[in-house]
Structures are given as C-alpha cells and as structure tokens.
Amino acid sequence: MRIGIVNDSAIAREALRRVVESADGLEVAWIAGDGAEGVNRVKADMPDLVLMDLFMPGMDGVESTRRIMKEAPCPILVVTACVGGCIDKVYQAMGFGALDAVDTPVLGLDGGCAGGAELLRKIRTVGKLIGKCPERCPRCASSGRPTAAERGPLLALGASTGGPFAVARILKGIPTDWDAATVIVQHVDAFFVVGLAAWLGECSGRRVRLAVDGDRPEPGQVLLAATADHLRLDPDGRLRYSTEPADACYRPSVDVFFQSVARNWRGPGAAALLTGMGRDGAEGLLALRRRGWTTVAQDQATSVVWGMPRAAVELGAAEIVAPLDDVADVLVRGIQAEARPRIHIHNR
Image 1: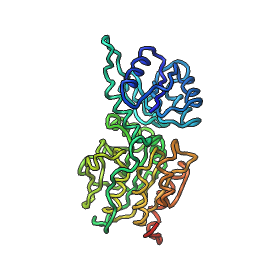
Image 2: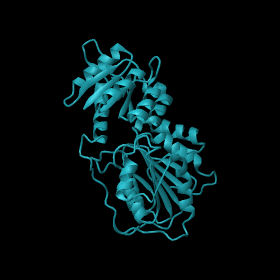
Image 3: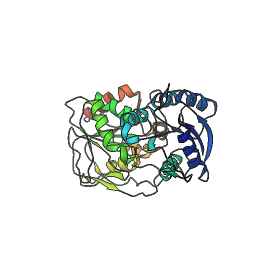
Image 4: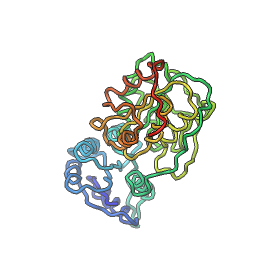
C-alpha cells in the first residue's frame, strides 16, 4: 500500500514515516505539511491511504477530509495526537468520510515508536476494506422460512464511510411518533461507538442507545451495534453478538445482521444501505428484498463513497435508489404501506 501523510509536526511526520516503512508491503507515497497541501497531493498522486492529522494551521484535517472526499475520494485514516481529547472533530471527519481514527505514535529516544502497532493494525484493516485482502468474506447463508414470532415494524440501517452524517440525517427525518424499532450497523471502531451514539442523538434529536446482548428491538427505540463483533437477530427476536465469521473483512458486518433479520423477523420492515466503501450489506439487502421488505440504496450523488450502495444496485437488492434527503421518507412510507401487495423476488 502507498501511504500519504498529512501532518504539520515534523516529529509526528518522522514517527509516521518510520512506522509505515517498518512494515512489509507499505511505503510512504508523499508527505504534506498541512491540509491544503494534502488535498493537492492527493489530487496529483492518489495514494492507497491518507494518514490525516486533525489540528493544522490554515486548513485543518476535518476540512481537508471533506475536500478530498468531494474532489478526489481516497481512503483516510485520522491520526492525531489525542483522539479521546478531540472526539467531536473525529466524528466530523468520519462524517465527511474518514474511515477510523488512532492516536499518533510517539517517537522514542531509542528510535522506536510507541503506538506504532495499533496504527499498523488500523492500516491493515483499511487494506482489507480497499481490496488488499480477498473481497468476499464468509457470510451467513440466508435460507429457509423465518422462525421468529410475529413482530412489529423494524427499520434496519447499514453504513460505513461517511455513514454517521447519513444516519443522523435519516433519524432526524423520521416522525417523532415513529412506532418502528430501528437498528443501526455502522462500521466503526468499538472505541468510538459510545461517543457516536451520543453524537447521533445530539444531531438527530432522538435517543440512540447501544445494543446490549439479549435486547429485543422495541417500538420507537433506536439501537446501535456496540462492538466489533457481529450483531445478529436470533429466532426469538433478541439481538446477539457473535465473533463469527471471524475472518470477515467488515466488523460489525451489515450482511450478517441483514441476513439474520431476513431469516428471523416476521413483521414488516424497511432497510437502507448507505454510503460506504466495499460491498458489505448488498447480499443481506437482497435477502430482505426477497422477504418483501422495502429496500433502499443511497444514490451516488449524495454518497461520500458509492461502494456499498452501488453493490446493492448491481445485485438487484435495492428496490429504490434515493438521495439522502429522501431516504427517511421512503423508508417510513414503505413500512406504512405494509398492506399493499409486495413483490417477492425468487430469482435474480
């Protein structure tokens, strides 16, 4: 992988360079000293991944991320001095398309870099997302009849790159008297998920709670997958966490959740696959469409990265392709129209 580094600190740049060059298969493509230069370097020589600082003079990392994802989309990993101390800016950067965040490694007197192993772990994870590992990962098969008891309506949302803003926009667009349960699977490191739930609540005006193993989705409730383990719906209608499939490229996997819902939720429902890199969720969305659900893919124009939604469209999994501002209304109308005849797809 070719790595671009955007950081105004010479010491931080040197630490990042040493960590990157210490690993097989990684190389530094270029180094930029501020956000504006980072944007220009990406446009001139796009790397496989950008390591983006947040606090820089002139154009900061949030604005640089926004510009890059708008003008020359490229995977971005936020690498900043203290992630926990600037969580709001981290979520802003993720909203514009950053994939994850990690503390900047600290250069030691012995030439080593404390925190370098964690940075390399994050880089390898991004490598999987951008196709540096096999794209197809084990997925739970969707077959047989649903085994769960009859239930109320369920709204299922899956998202990745740029997902926080998209999810917040949809939650804000749902009526206050909404009687469906909502479950969200967002690709995000478990370190950030508690703050993400709070951030989504502040942005949308709705209470967003982390899903606990054994929860039953209840009317009006908004639950967010809370760990890097996969969230599943079991035949009793309870949410469970599972480490399997252990080698899935995406954690938590939207496919795993969607397919478990297709098997085990007998009530009406609607699902949306939102902005994100890769293909996770497309096969699960198809399984839900085959169950007669309203299935929506976010359109290309409003997606930060049109990867997951595009995969759903190509697979025939999306009944409707809609711009972000229309997704909430489409989902609500889909659930409210439960009584109308639905098209069940048996073959592609």
